Image 1 (cartoon, one colour):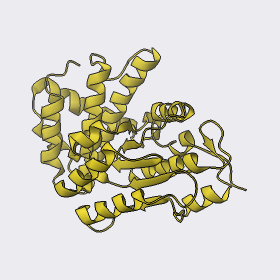
Image 2 (image 1 turned 120 degrees about the horizontal axis):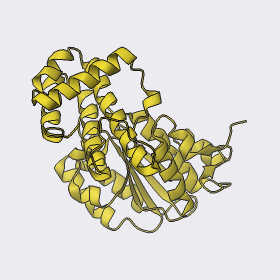
Image 3 (image 1 turned 90 degrees about the vertical axis):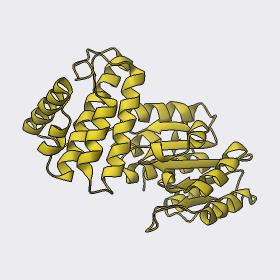
Image 4 (image 1 turned 135 degrees about the vertical axis):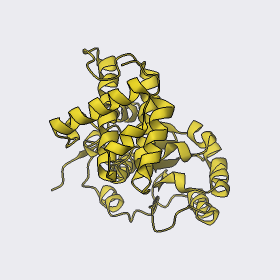
Amino acid sequence: MEKAGTIGALGATGSLLVQERLSRYLQSQRVHPALLFIGPEKEVKFQVAKGMAKFLFCEQKINSSFCNQCSTCKRIEKEIHPDVYFFKEDSEDTLKIETVREVIGQMRVTPIEGPHKICVIEEAHRMNSAAANAFLKTLEEPGEGRFFILTTTQSGSLLPTILSRCIAFTFRPEKEGLFISPESEKKYRDLFINAITTNNFFQVSTALNEKEEALLFLQFLQSELYQSLLAIESGIPNRSLFQSLSSHDLTLKFDALVTLEGRLRSNANYGLMLESLLRTHFSGVSL
């Protein structure tokens, strides 16, 4: 028999902070019609989106838990529930207006079971300009019992007007979840400190001669930012690289790193992109 599920459990490879925030949010029983999940791991965000759908439909939910055993939960897991739509990333580079019109049309139809209809759009930043503007009108007036869950690895590519209509949850990696050796961690720390203090960002891309190592370097910086955010929110001593930054600045820089990680996973020219990010977001940071 399957165990009951929680949003926190589904997000276990993300951050403890986002797990706690999602659980508290669901317990409030006031779910916003448009949610946005931001982070580099597509599958993690998609599974949490599926868990949100289960929570909204589950026949036996308690607080932020869903049973994972009722017919509704099982059909959502198999992606065959008639009132839950999944628009997953495919081979196309963009989400065109025809697809968005299909989304809008399906969400306007009366639900077949119960009061809700839910649409999950994976990698929502793939909407082209026409599609994004058409979708924006639906977000402005989604309708009673209509919920949209968007996921993205590139939040900076979404229209600001779409971002403003969503409640965003950023999935931050935890230090314990990263497989970075002590030697590599020291290398990345020294490399970053030297680049910041000398204002020489070209040396970073030169030292990271493979894309996989560049991704590890980004995850190392994300982890340092996460440790600072955790220290601020929990009141523990802050021993990360970014002790001088405010929570607001930490979040902005973290989101920029997450966006770049998503772009790097589909782009071979990592060096120039990495240099540009460091120059834009970290130049002049006091260490």
